[in-house]
Image 1 (cartoon, rainbow, N blue to C red):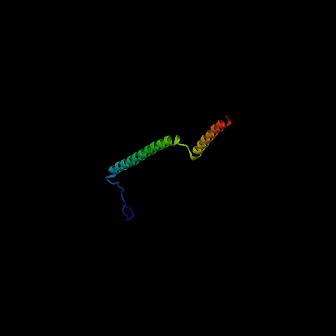
Image 2: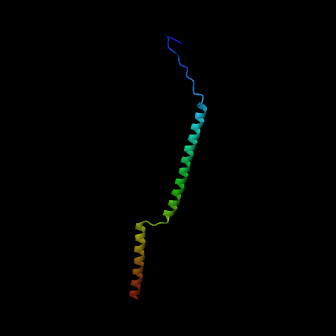
Image 3: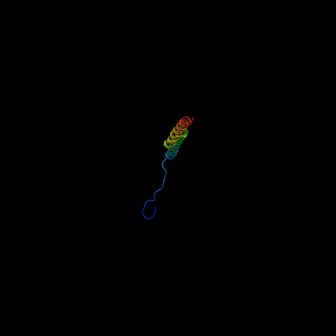
Length: 82
């Protein structure tokens, strides 16, 4: 003691080791879940990309329809010209 005041001694809690283990376990759990979610998102992204790569946009569908109609018109004009 000095000057009539009590000096406090800092003692860490006895259960600090299990607390650190709990924190580590929680951290692993959080990162494990995050990793799982990221893998699932990547798989979904890959599936959607593959699905959409073969799908035509509305503009491309219109272009295909115009080409088809022009082809029909061309064949009818050829028949008319003969």
